[in-house]
Length: 443
Image 1: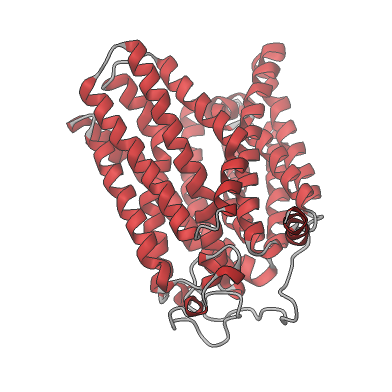
Image 2: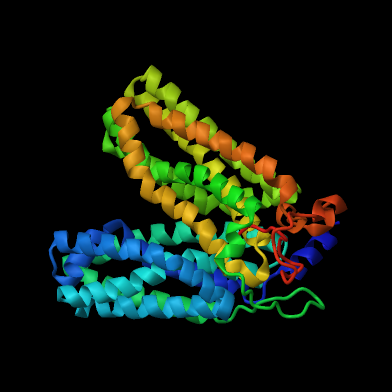
């Protein structure tokens, strides 16, 4: 039995997988070196005022969102690996040029090009997972990449803190060049991965239907809508937690730091372990993603109880950290299954377009979260948690309901375990769609 499992693991190992994971970890270190200090980082690197930097970042960030559909089309035309390498090269060049962009036009130009690459990268990386892995290997890569990204960003934040301690604010320039080096090295490593094709299957034809095919795919749109509901919960940790602690629980800022530390440590430390247990259980991806949403809902209900009881500071700390543990478990269960579900349900020939549309659910949730949470919090501190709990429960119900309409290779990590009846999907896709995707597939 052990030998069989080991053989299966070897068979599903992705060519160049270690290079892919190492590259993702290195690029995450680069991201961690500037994301926590983004405004301060660009202010010191360029010498421009905080106000100008803020305006440029907002405008370029929104433009980057608008560019995502083009990135999806580029993946379908040129392949995820080529576009991934191009984005790494653009990001490396952008950070190498930031210290030289001392004028507003120069900074805006470099920031725009870099933002286009940054915003498009999640779409392309998800597409790359679909291009290089099959079956349960996709779930494993999802979990491993998430763990490495959390660990890398934490290491990057610590690294830049050390750089600033040694060289002061002048160290931000070295940090920018360090980011450029990290992205360049990550690109070199990712170039070693190899796309895979199903045995005997001809290369997929590039689709001509474009985004009209995506918009006709009702199961896919339902999956995207369900993910939007869950994505609001993902935004809660960075947006709602700090506000709730400060304004409703009247706790110290250190509670926010403790919550982030616990979340990051668990994601980096046990993310792969949890995903592996879920995968070995044979659970359908829809069911495990729904379980993650239910854990989110449990954490949100617990926040309502905590905000109602408002115990002393020590009890609040213990309760809050316990809630963060439940919340993080939901994240660790949902993320690999939800990600692999979207990748596996997308028809291969238009995977980029499908995943670009799916990724918009995260982007829209992130954009909406600040105004939604602050508005609800102004009415009652428990109200945003109630809305999030209902949203998470709705997402779980939608995932289970969509299960029968999604292709078997998306719902099941191992196609051999899927009943033959589950192989049928909706008939919205054209006949040219490859057999490896959904006939009504989702991204």
